[in-house]
Length: 451
Image 1 (cartoon, rainbow, N blue to C red):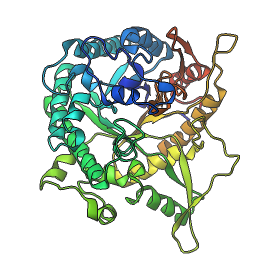
Image 2 (cartoon, rainbow, N blue to C red):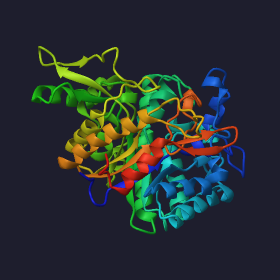
Image 3 (cartoon, one colour):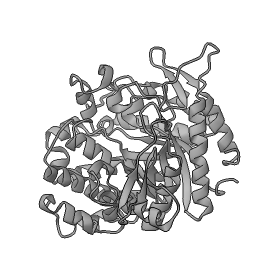
Image 4 (cartoon, helix red, strand yellow):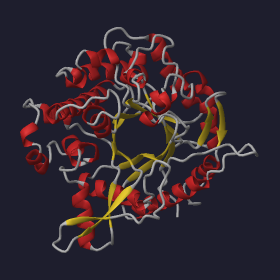
């Protein structure tokens, strides 16, 4: 079986994780630059200051993509590279980089998918109030105008945000990611509301200012996916109920971050659960947040199993001690890709694109000069088989982006986790195609028939 005729195969990265060149050509600092300088914040005192040096080696990386037959490439734009202070004067050198990257991709026959925000908030804006400031959504809209005005004659595919529940929950609630704050819940919910407003305003900007017809998405972290223990109606409903329960922690909450965007309202159970800490909302806020989208991006990595208990209440089924896990200690649950796609398609009715999927490992270059990552090939094959199932059962599935093209800076984990299908020797910046990259090349050429 193959995937749909127009199914898009690609790979994804983000600016801070691969670009490096943190002090080059007028780029301003982001909250991640500062966070990495904080003692104990990032393993091995690592940072994205150099990373994969993609800023200087992007043509080499595009050649790798072209050689693999990638049809699309999802990248993010560094806000502070383009607007060093977050607003005000544009840094033309920084904007020119994304011009060159876009042109290089198109010349190689690769369709660019641009993400406006993947966690690297300008430090100057953060110090001015950041996402807590009521005007923060307007700052983001003005940034979006700069990017759309420059790139939208060639870029059609856009994502506004990547994983808002993660950068809000980890960055402002538990403090494990930049900017490393542990705020009271009312402030965290205010930040979340302002991010949703920024999403809506950015969609308005893209729709109104694009020079070619845009396709706009919103990329969500949906892991851990609630997977039913069996395919009985009771277990499926238990998993669905758990998956969309607004009482889940904010970093694992699906309905709170998606219902306002697609349905124009916060979930009722969430309004009740967060009642004492709800942020002030303007009368038109939800109308602004709920803008027409073309698709939803799902970032899927792993799942948890649920069943209906004796009284019908959902209960988790613990993983067996011997259950296979990635080096990140995430359980390998291929069915999570099927159930995430199905549940989101059923609830929201929007086309789905898998904006991230992959696994962390500890990969090394073997004496033969190759990187033999058979576990990753097995992982991807099993997950893609589940994606085939979703397609065959009628889910409107538009594409798949493996995370990630390159080994890279993995946030608070530094360089200890490798997600790439291309190995990076950070001392020499040598790129080595892993076995998984060569396998993925075959998958793309066959439109999934070899899965």
